[in-house]
Every structure is written in structure tokens, then in C-alpha cells.
Length: 288
Image 1 (cartoon, rainbow, N blue to C red):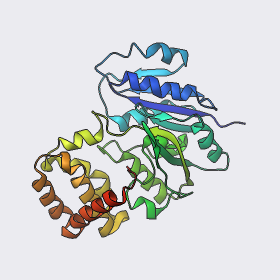
Image 2: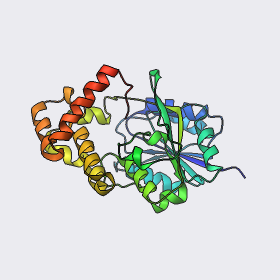
Image 3: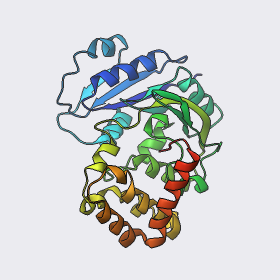
Image 4: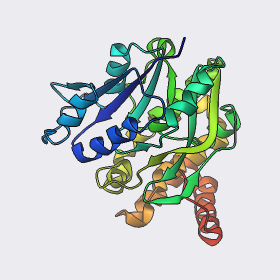
């Protein structure tokens, strides 16, 4: 008997992107059993995409009030009927063999899957982790796999271990770490099989650039939660990277650097700039 997959899409104020995401699902070589769209109380109209939603028999649910992406995903999981739930952010697009590749992993007993991706609009840039299984050596370095649009898992596993609704960011890395610690059969597909959209105007990067140093604590929740898992070196490195992310676009640059020294130490702060210089010199592809 074939494995049925439910797709859970979270969306907020991006009907034009949602349409592209749905067309990506429509082009899949293996079609999902159902599509569940959780609209997190968007303030703009979705009329332009509703005909496609209806054509694809998707279940479109608009939340009466905004609850955040993590709760929206948990709601989607609670409604799903497939043995596997695959997540898709409204601004990303799956390549045609995405579900086929993921479902092949479940046919051999896998419980959760991540994969690589291409940069949308610059598809020659690929971010691929060569692991075939999710490893601690990769996880301590941060999310070196993918965001939510490259993640799927067994529905029963997700119901027992839902997304942490207290986290403002890093929910993908958080659940990957938790699954690893639970000794879940967690595989990585070392291929770029979806398109990831970088630097949205309303994306995480844009929001971080507008933050003040005093507001950063809410972005460190996942690192603090898994401090023991990371150990001192990787914890300090992660905190420094969070603090100094997109520094050239921020105001109060010196205040951000001071905050990094206070919270992560001078060594981690200095190494951030050393590694930044190396990346520019070597012209390494971006990662997430």
C-alpha cells in the first residue's frame, strides 16, 4: 500500500507566493493525498489564489486571529490524515521530484526527512549537506540542512512532539535537535530538490536588521533551550552569529558588537569576523 502524504502550508499576506507554491505541488510526479493551507489571519485578500485552491481541492483555513507559524503548523498536523506530513512555507517552491524523493525514504522505514535546496532566482547556487543521516556534528553548527520547506515527518511523531510554540525563530533546528536526541530514524537527502527564497522584504533577515540589541533575547530561544546539546564553543558561536547577522545593514553597529562580546565572549566575536572575511575571499555560496 502506498504511503499517503499530507502537505501543510503556512501563509501570511502572500497570496501571489502561495499561488506559485501550489503550482509547484501541482507539478509533482507523486501527488499528495491532501493539502492543508493555514492562513495566519492575513490582512490582505486571497481572492486571486482561491480558484486554484478550489481546483486542487485544498483545505484552506483562515485563522480568526494570528497565532504564529509554529502553532499554525501544529494545527495543520492535527488536521492531517496522511501517514507523512510535508511542510511548505508559502514563499518556497518544490521541484517536481520533491515528494517522490521524500516518500522513497519512508518506504525504507525512515521517520523524518530533510533535504538540500537551490536559491530561487539563482538556481546555480545550491545548499546541500552531504550527510545521509542527520548528525550531531552538523546540528551543532546550526541549521546546515534546510528550512521547513525541506522537512517532512511521520504524523504520529509530529503529534507526540509538536513544534515549540514559544520559539520566535529556529523552530526547524529545534525540532531537528529534538528528533536527533530521541534517536529518530532521521535521514537527509543530499540533493537540492526545492527552491528557497532568500531575503524577503518581510522575512526574518529584514526583521532582524530593524531590531535593537536589547530585543535580541527572543531570537536566542532555541540556542538557550539546547545549550547543553551545543556545548560552550558552539553555543557562543551560535549566539555571536545571531547577534552579528546582517551587521552591515543594522544601526548601532558598535552596540551589536559589544552585545556579542558580553553574551558570547571576545573569541567568538572575533572569529565571526574572521570567518566572514574568509567567506568573502573564498566566495563561498550562502547558507542558512
